[in-house]
Image 1 (cartoon, one colour):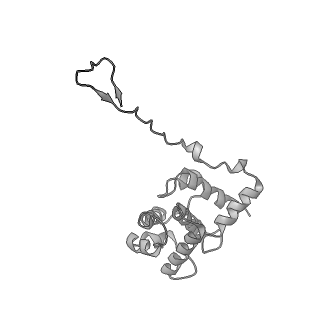
Image 2: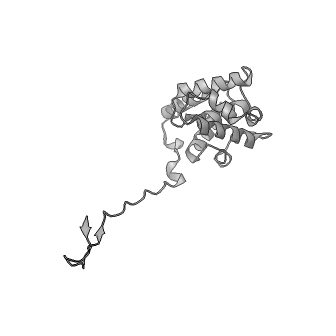
Image 3: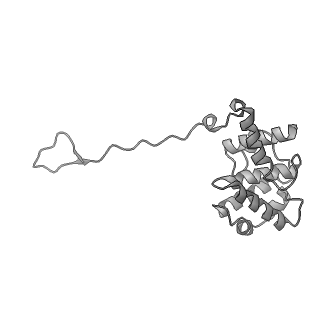
Length: 173
């Protein structure tokens, strides 16, 4: 501790603690975005290979895009194998191999969804975000562009950019 200047030795002393720590400012959105154009073709293909296979239905359809959004929401703090398992269990809960849709997800109880995705960290919060995303997308197509994706619950700028990249690249083939 440091004694404040201007105090007498015999007088009551004012103690000043260590200097206040400066708070780290949140990064600006443009600092958190992946720059896919700066990556090598090999790096882009590796990302595509990892993400295109996560949903339980074939690429290109609306269900695939919704499952890709769900995979991105689930992926925070989780490994791909656990995300894939949770998507498969959600597909089983939905009753078939056709996967699940925003309309199906919108009417689910977040508590029940949380039980199905219990293998994943923060499953209760992620279940709420999945159901909220389903409700937001009822009767609509999953956005293909960053602006629409980042408005979905559970997707920040970085994940929305990733989903937009994967959707654009997979559907361009």
